[in-house]
Image (cartoon, rainbow, N blue to C red; front, side, top):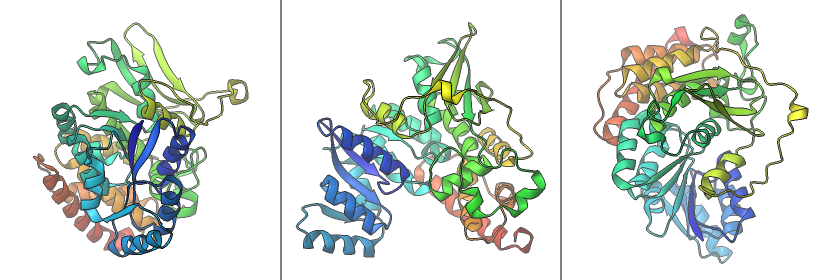
Length: 394
């Protein structure tokens, strides 16, 4: 029986994770569930899975949840704030931590799980984007097992040889082919992008996701962040990772070997597949995902990414090559810009403008701890707020 903490249990990844866990009650026990302030949904999940702990970052929401659970006789203990998150991420009774808190807020609890030597199912892109060197050093020091859950990185992990950490070139890998759908605006006329609404940006053609990651898919910043993440996860040089637009989202990524072989991982676009793979690794379990019908799929298309249409891709590559806190600054600026777009304060096409200006103004240093990363994050958000407030970005 494996005990599991789900960080970010009320989001779409949390839903998929708990759906897989519910199929295998003999294999998994939910130890803790966490959320930001989603009291109602977390209350329902606690009633269903009866975890030892429930954690809410918001103190008032935590108090409300505590009261409701006591009234219905639940024995689940409610914790609050960052201390509560750190407790359930590193608790000695926990075997596996699903790190699914969106954004920079997930850095500290994910690091706590790594430093405690847990099996960490990494969903949070920002951990490696913002602090890749620190996280990978911590994995090596603690003996934690880091398993990627992003569909693309999980696909790459499945296609690589088990000894890939000896070096991609040494094990015969020529390059990693990181696929992306191109989002809802892959074929939209460039002039029309200025008038894109948040609802349109969140209408992904293949995946059902939260608003922030949906907008990231629409700008292809998600692929830029995944590019950075892939370099850290698989110890790859930037030139060893190629982004390929694949509209059907059936091939989740590929690995090319020096003998000309290309291995691909295929499946229906459903996050339960990579979650089930990572939960059971190195075994395989049922995920609840239907079999891929290649006859119905009929065709698989590929094209090069359009860097004029998706300038966020180029900005991510620049940040990776600059190194230090540049990727953390990129991420913070993107989070602020996306939030402003979703609030209708800036246009869709202003998102990369905000990011570029923040990167140009921010100071980049080599982080020695998560504190340095958090300081860079805070400073970048302040600069982003000033850029967003500028009338040129309205």
